[in-house]
Image 1 (cartoon, rainbow over the protein chains, first blue to last red):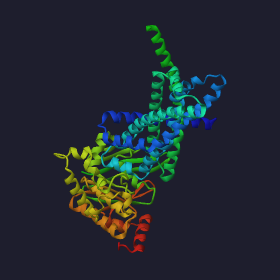
Image 2 (image 1 turned 90 degrees about the vertical axis):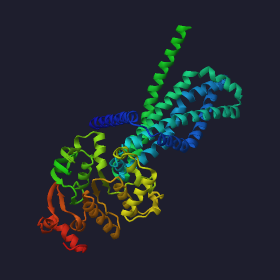
Image 3 (image 1 turned 135 degrees about the vertical axis):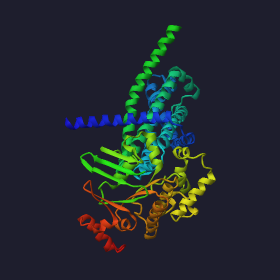
Length: 266
Length: 257
């Protein structure tokens, strides 16, 4: 019981630390003059580094879902719904979730390791002592870069996923691409796309925030950096799963509200 | 114009590394802070630049209470203080030139100038500071990972000197350096202090070096000041720890105290 209590307290402290760090980033980003070139550099570097992984993952996420849905729909002779069902699932749930897990492993771990190494080798202290705010110089460009490139990568990953699904549906399930595409609007509308984008933004924020926080607060030499990287990966995935639940709920409520408003004005 | 510690106590959880420590460093003075590992020597330096806050007590730089300053106030204090770290602490992603020029491009530095420096002027300062630490301009475009550890430490020193600090804080500046570079760095600390009236606080294990260039020596032990004396007084000290340091120096034969 005592162990559970201390775990709960340390989890709350961790959450408090991350929240304070997020506020600090936002305050610094809005109060000080941003470094556009460093931010753009980060966006390009993060996007290019993760593009092949995300494309590859996106392709297979779509393909797996097509095969799974096809098994069920075939039984009820409802394969004409495959495109819609698959695209809706990929856009709203599976795509953002799996791609952001990959980003957490690749970009999150890289960022935590880079910042952690800078911290334990006193590079961050040196920046501070030379009269530069390390949050402004190091963290804001990385955070903004990760958030923006996460959204870009998720969009690209989802597009590849949809394209890959169509190809798998035609090649392995014998469903015509046109038939597949025609069913997409039945299950996918503007709110589905907006929902996917909203989730991508949330998950990108989590990846950027947690990895920067764990790296920036790393202590204790090489072991400390290793611990920071592991914790960054674990916590990012943990927070993403929680965020997935709440963002799905929020999207459902928003979709229902929009539908009701639409009906009222019809 | 001085650094003053007033009843400073610093604890990390149950461990107290500084207890009620008070001392003052006068302008142009070279103060060596000696002590065994883990006795709060580096912590003392970090309090001066405000990267660490005391648990209680006050630290003054030029009469300004560093412990009470906000981020902007701290930036101004840090502009006056140059800190040389235990590690070279060079930014991996920047070349030697960019590292040394880093402090010349900060808003705090530019603000005190009538106009921002041109790239040519920056390059001139960078080359001048590198030559001060016995490095030539051939390494300007190299990355920190492409030069030796000793060279990295000297580049780090050049970076600290570039913005022309009034206070120099050295955290074991000669660790990992060859004897020639060690002598060069020690001579440089001495010259800067004497010619430019730069105040220096040097954290070190090197009693030989302290006896050679320090004005006063502060010895920390068990979180307290064991001695704060001139070199002549230190040489006569009967404290066992100081005796140990002195006998170690004699054994190494690097100096004749």
